[in-house]
Image (tube, rainbow, N blue to C red):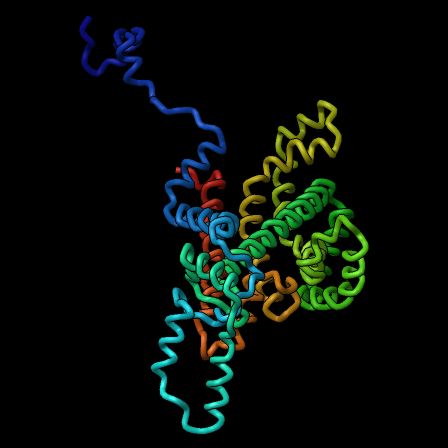
Length: 380
C-alpha cells in the first residue's frame, strides 16, 4: 500500500524481522577482553613504555645472567692487570708505556716507576690461568686499581641496586597499602589521627634517619651477623643496607598510603561495597577482597615509580659510604671508587653513572605507560 504524502502512517516493512544476512552486518565483531588483557593491549601500543620494558628486561639479564657468562669474580684481584682500559691487555699497555718518553725530573720519575711497578710478576700457573680467561673473555670494560674486572663488578652492582629497589618497593607496597586502606575505610577521627601521623613522618628528613640508623645499628648488626648462623650469609651486604631497608619501612610508604586512602574514599561509597556489607562481609574482607583489588592500578603505578626512587637513594648512600660493604659492589659504591681516579680514568665513573641513568629512565618510562594503560578514563 502506497503511503500518502504528508501522512504520519508508518511503513510496515520497516518492522519486519531481519534475515540472517542483515543480522551479520549489524553485529560488531569485537573480542571480549578482561581488564588485564585490555591494559596489556593498550600498553603495547605505547612505544615509550615498551622501550622502557625492554631496557628493564635487558638490565635484569645483564645483572643476573651476565655473571654466569663472564669467567671473572667480582672480588677476584689479578696482579699485573691493574687499571686496564676497556679491551686492553697488559701486553698492549706495556707496549704503550714503552713508547712514552722518560720523565725529566725526579717527581715524574717517581710517579712513573710507581705506576709501572703495579704490574708485578706472577707465577707461571697463575699467568697461564689468567691468560686463558682473558683469551676466552677479555676485560671488556677494563679493570680497577686492584685488578678486578669492571664488567663483572658492574653486573653485581646492578644486581644489588635492582634487588634493593624491588625489595624496598615491596615493603612500601605492603605497609602503605594496608595503612591507607584502613585509614580511608574507617574514616572519622581514626582517619584524622592516622593522617596526622603520616604528616609527622613526611616531615622527618629521611636521609638523616638513614645516616643515624647506619651509625647506631652498625655495631649491634655486626654482632648479630657474627652470632646468628642464619644471618651470617648477609655479612657481605653490611649493616648500612639493612638500616636502609628499616628506613624504607619507617618512612617511605607515606606516599603509597595517601594514594590508596584517596582511592578507598572513592570506592567505599560504591554499590558493590554496600552489597558486600549487606551480605555480612566484615571490614577485613571488604578491604582485602573488594577495595584493594579495585585499587590495583594506582598501586602498581606507584610501586613502579618507587623502584627507581629506592635505587637512587641506595646509590647515593653507597656513594657516600653508608650503603653496601666492600668487596661487594653496588652502582653507588662503584661510582665512589672511581672518584679517586676521575681525571686519569674517567670511564670508570661513566660506567656506573650510565647504568644508573638507564635503569631509572627505564622504570620511569614504564611507569608512565602503566599509568595510561591501567587508567579506565584513558580508554579509546
